[in-house]
Amino acid sequence: MNTAETPFEFVTVSYLTRIGNQSAGTLAEFLTGLENCSDASIFHHTFQTLGSHHFLTEGFSNDFAQWVLVDANRNDLAEQLAALDIRDYVSIAALRSDLCRLTSDYCAAFPHLASQAALERFYFCESVEVTAPLGRSAQTLDEFRDGIAHLSHASFYFHFISSRLRLQLRTNDFSHWLADGLGLGTLGESVNHIDIYTNTLDGSRAKLLRLIDRERRKA
Image: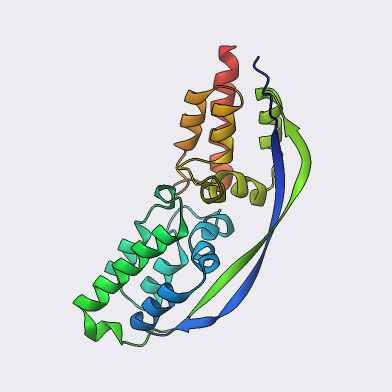
């Protein structure tokens, strides 16, 4: 069994939500908010949503699309915003650009709807991330599996979803270490292909463990 020179260090994480000073009551105001809100706010309403709503497998995948659907009553725009796959982005700037482009194009095409009041205002929030070593590490695939099995939802989300921005790669902490640390590139790629939109965090973890178990049986 391969032993990694650099162990995988599991991290525990907590998030504190902070409501910003920007809000929107129309699509036009929503566009202005998207253009000017902090990167942390874009992250909170897209990447962070997958962590806080991990038990949902239906409905829209981000807070922006959900507000546009429920409060602005614009299903067509909501579907476009929800179709943006965060796995395709390695920077908040690129994600913000596409969010703004879709909303701007819609407002330009339907100016009478851009100024229509929504049922409820949208409040741009941020997540303050606090991380700390979990006190658990792994150098072998068996140790790695054991660590995965005991992670909290927040820690699993940190390593599997939000890590894409930290790594600046279209991958996650788990896949990155499996490929670079243990030389298991094929396993790392399979893990990275686990669909984070159609699975809950528990479902994603279960699929990850099954992939690891399949690899262990090969040894």
